[in-house]
Image 1 (cartoon, rainbow, N blue to C red):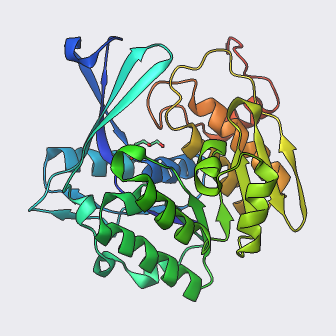
Image 2 (tube, helix red, strand yellow; image 1 turned 45 degrees about the vertical axis):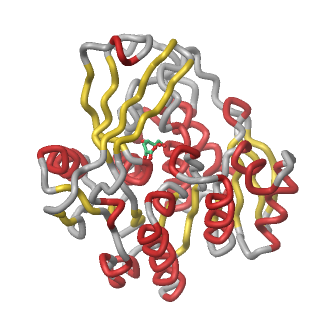
Length: 317
Ligand code: KDG
């Protein structure tokens, strides 16, 4: 397996009209979860990815399972729990540039995950373990599950990639800072957004943030700067990669997961960190051009032409 990831995936309801959601009569039902978004993006680029989770034994659980399996992600360790529901999430498009997220995921099947749900051999089989700061925010048992997964990865020399993915609605600032730093300092690669770096380190200089992580043993740090691109730091070099221009952002949610897809894909293809960050910025930009958290993640051919500047709004006849 190239990448194994661990986290909750929900059914995502998006109102078909903009404005307060209380006035929305029609919704589309999609599937979204930061970690499975990454697994799906990797599968689209031809990598082998596996997703570890728990789902409710309900229609929504079956929808999520069928969708992710259909995208070519390995779901062989995913189990259904009779006693709990699949989580739900609503994306309220208040205006075309203001998105609000509402979760209905307390006590969901995934939030009841425990370290006993992990299969050590499955994690050991991967080149990379991808985790995000959403899973430890779901419950104390989920936090312990993430820590156990990291422990298995380290024992078997699986590279740990951590995206802090701060979700303020899920926990207090104090809990978040403590848990996210604890995981970040155990990871090999950390991918914070600039605002997350400010939250964790109390200052907004990407190089300073990277140096703090590096001093704690993180070997590759990439700080996402949104439309401005990304800053990378490792023993082999540091620098800034400019962002790819996007004419019209349709849906910004999922851009960070797209970034992680591009980075992991580049590293799996043995690109330099700089080139992998360029691929990351490209996939992140492409993710924003389509509604939905995974729908904009590209297959390889489109990614390559996007990077080469040949699909920027061309008519493809
Ligand atoms: O990164 C996008 C995710 O935030 C989204 O797909 C849903 O996993 C999700 C969450 O917990 O917000």
